[in-house]
Amino acid sequence: MEQASLATKTSSNVIRCRAAVAWTTNAPLSIEEVEVDPPKAGEVRVKIIASGICGTDNHTLEGKMKTPFPVILGHEGAGVVESVGPGVTTVKPGDKVLMFPLPECRECFYCLYPKGNFCEKENILSPTGLMLDGTSRFTCRGKKIYNIMGTSTFTEYTVVHEIAVAKIEAAAPMDTVCIMSCAVPTGFGAVFNTAQVTPGSSCVVFGLGGIGSAIVMACKASGACRIIGVDINEEKFPRARALGVTDCLNPNKLKKPVQEVVKEMTGVGVDFAFEAIGLIETMVAALKSCNRSYGVCVIMGVAPTGSQLSFDPLVLLPGRTLKSSVLGGYKTRDDIPKLVTDYVQKKINIDPLITHRLPFPKINEGFRLLQEGKCIRCVLSMRP
Ligand code: APR
Ligand code: ZN
Image (cartoon, rainbow, N blue to C red; front, side):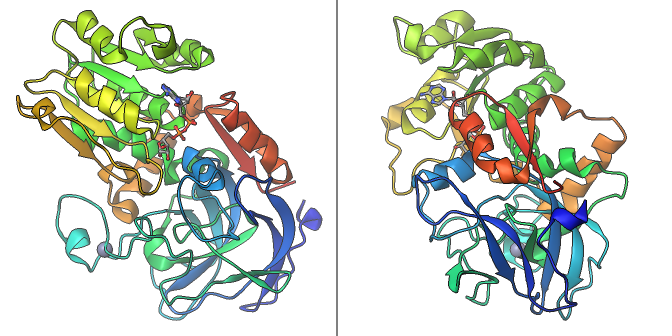
């Protein structure tokens, strides 16, 4: 199997391997031979085993989320540590690991404070596409290639900071738990940590893709008795129902704004609303869908760079709460390996989220499936 890979390992030296390079926005990814530099101090080089394709990768490729190009996308990866740079103590070569788009440095205010998870070393709000020292570990055809949120998983090898990597248990199936690097904690944490959905409550989920589906599963696990799913793609409805959605709404087929329909269906609006699309209009609709007195709206979709959310503040005045989180508020290195163990021990099930699997070279087909709304999560396997 390994023979089909271009990778040639020369210990702690540059590795040549295959990667999917995005040279520009709105163009197919190009499978190229790239050079991956050895890890510097505090860094880890990982052989990627599997990677999910996330809506955020697609938004970035479509130019809606600004990050430097050319770039190697992908931030939902599982792999095995190939080598470590000086000073790395928490993982060693051979360890199975997940890589996270949000680090946990365990030193900053946010990491040391029990609540929240938004580490100061994040590279999400104003992405540089570079490692913390301001340099890149990838080159292709003599050009510098940027990373995405310090991860980049659409490559046979990547270099990440130790603070964004966690060892997971050896029994974990890599081609499934890779989606625990983003989709699963984002959706589950939105419900369990950020909203804290209560038994018997009513919920609405805007967007029934990968993140929305994880949200639906967690709402059901929290004992919500009504879960309304909203999507303009009705092909998403049968699967959403199987996961726990009780009522499906297509806003394009309604005679009234969706929030008014949700209010009529529930009498006063839902207890908890979730936005998992990334559009301003659906964020406002989600907010207005929740009960005006104590409804909680959690925005998990990432809006295009530079957009402005605007609504009459009187929407909030009666008591609504508007919240958000990244990676569901989980402290990535501390908490996510425990979710992996829960999966291995069959305490949680994430299998229904993965609807398609493709070999890595078919990555553009995977993006097409996402763009055409045909898949929930498509996982790429790096093995041929
Ligand atoms: N109204 C309702 N549903 C919509 C609309 C709309 N105007 N536009 C798109 N959708 C639906 C799509 O049909 C799809 O089912 O939203 C869903 C989005 O799902 P995915 O494309 O699978 O994306 P996902 O990975 O779930 O990410 C969703 O969360 O993390 C963020 O950046 C990510 O903003 C993105 C969001
Ligand atoms: Zn930190």
